[in-house]
Length: 181
Image (cartoon, rainbow, N blue to C red; front, side, top):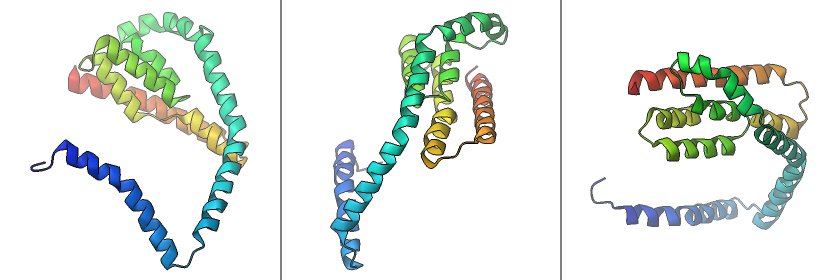
């Protein structure tokens, strides 16, 4: 952008949120909304939601840690190494592909490790970044949102979400091979 430097953009972004809050307060005042009461009601609802989500979140964190620390992933990688070598897919991406549907933060950490180890402009770095951006945390989303509103039967949503994640892995590999060889 001509005439606009990074300092101006940082200053604008620093003022954006306070200005937005002031505009919302002004709008609420104009509409005669009891702002403090509405804020307290929203904060109470937020706390209730946080407490209802907490058991689902704790169960999911426990499951992820159990998977990561059990050594199961290392056994899976050893089993699939010949297939990945034949298909010219780096086995190093497998941990991220398996963890991504479970935890966004864990897959992000794996991506950062891959990029630091192999570089951002390598096939593995590009594949990790593409996979991170093209897939979702299906199991996390289902356990958190379905658990918080009490939906017990989520098998079709789970199947559809995991199928979409598998397609995202396949598409990421295909597109990175096509564009970056």
